[in-house]
Image (tube, rainbow, N blue to C red):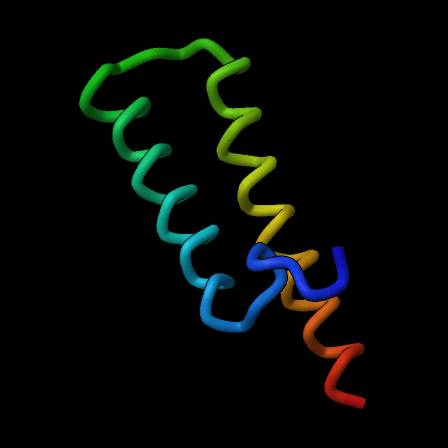
Length: 60
């Protein structure tokens, strides 16, 4: 898991872009107020933050 694709620096922005686009899709285009949908957005956002933290620790 240490050298996984999901923790690479180039993949960090993908988490935030997908989270933003899925939020926009469900909030404005589909117009849902189901909170379970937003858990996916929250999970992607947290995964992006975790990836930033892991990359910061590896650079030391």
